Image (cartoon, rainbow, N blue to C red; front, side, top):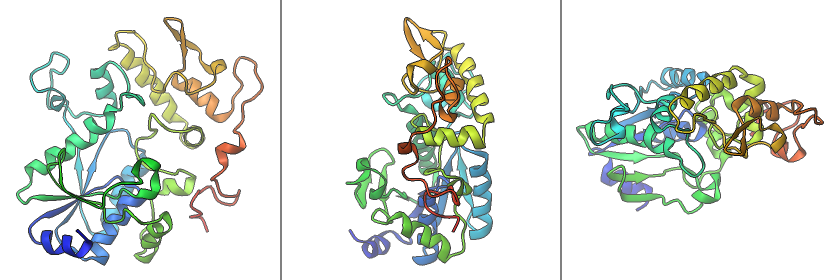
Amino acid sequence: MNEQEIINRYNGTHTFGIGFSGGKDSTATLLYLTRVLKLKNVKACFADTGWEADVTYEYLDYIENVTGIEIVRLQALCGQLFKKPNPKVPDTNKKLDMLELAKIKGRFPSSQRRFCSTELKLVAQQKWISEQVDPVMNVSGVRREESTKRRNAPYFVENDEFLNGPNWLPIVDWTWEEVFDIHKRFNVEPNPLYKKGFARVGCFPCIMANKNELGLIATEFSERFDKISEMEKEVAKHSKRGKASFFSHDTVPMRYRRQEYNGVAFCSALDVRDWAIGAPADDQTIDMFSDDDFEDIAGPSCNSIYGLCE
């Protein structure tokens, strides 16, 4: 089904619900649907993980002001994690965020157990969809260019089993240049994090963040690592191991891993911060960023990998 067929079939009968993250792609999608296609029944939904950058929360307000479109804030509830009462969750109506989720699970998400996106985002979106009077057309800013995993993402799905409705990716074939072009076309600034050198916007940081992203946070938002360190202590109280690490144990070289559990060395948030900024570890030579860490970074005049400072 092509774009015009989708509009002919669903416009006027469905709400176009955009999963809005505050990033470049979801903003481009919002502008495309409302300013180019001029669809009326569009709602932008931000699933709050409680773990976004303050800059991103401020950006939501900016988008509302500049576009005149309300961004619906969604947040999952602790009770949604279980189908029946659970002693771990006495307050089922308590808002679920990254810290609460990790405490309930007794651990942080990992590359092998990435329960964060499902529990914090998709469940909240699923609940919102079920509460709407009109059926919802799910709209996402996913693009094939983003990763090999998304290279075969379908343009349109008649029925998404999880979200229980049609799913449309209107900018799936766009390049990042086209994404920023539509921002410029309608005089809408992208999230400020891009100009600071970040390649993506979302959990701050994501458990899968690379060294460059972590280095940027360590230098621009150093207090974030102090926050993660406190979270690790909180989650450790709920862990069977009595220890908890936000990052995978092998995130950093062995010489930076100052913690141990059952003979396995792992890293704390502060260890990761030291590694990311190139601080000495155990009297070793300073481990500065390699050339590979900055291979996509623009020259010294602009931190943005997309050249947004020009």
